[in-house]
Amino acid sequence: LKGEENVLFNNVSTTKDALNEIIRE
Image (cartoon, rainbow, N blue to C red; front, side):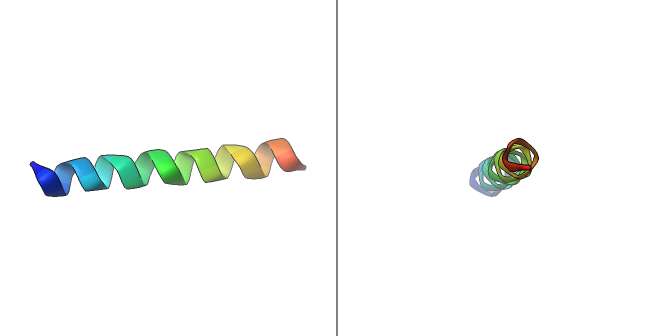
């Protein structure tokens, strides 16, 4: 379960970074 939580958190972080990149341009 801990590993799955980390994967989920990493996906959220990646999505946030992608959104920030889009907003920045």
